[in-house]
Length: 117
Length: 117
Image (cartoon, rainbow over all chains, first blue to last red):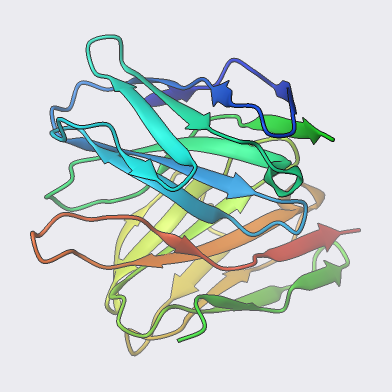
């Protein structure tokens, strides 16, 4: 069964430092996508970064990078140079069957990140 | 385009009443998803549409829930005979296929927070 596990309910990081948020996944599909979303206290889910299962390079988007280790089934999010505005809930999500019907996202439980000044 | 919009943002209703939520996706997106998020959890998939066709429904979507997307544009989610357990954030998202054919990120609306008293 598809499953996403985020084992860190809460994380603290000092402003301007880097932080890694953990995500492991379970799937029997060969073709899948991995996503990270940010959810501030306002509630809106904001897309951050995407990694396809066949992508050989780790995805990067500005200060966000995804450390994709396929054999270990992990897709950790690295935020460099943390800012106070990064304080939020972060969700890892997976979608199977990239090229077929479907497309629903399976989410983890989330990690609450707090950035300290 | 201003992104995915949802209306209302907040709804308080008494147990047993019916409620209806609306979602307007990004205009060129042919896929529309509904998710439910309870406090402290990640979003859970409810149903999705490709154009006007409802292609998948979660077992979470009981008989009291119905969703429509009549012209392949906006969508409505109706809950009949609401129960206290229906209290949650209801999120709508939309997406489209890339030129390569795969499904990419979903863009979420701000959500409708339902409180059943």
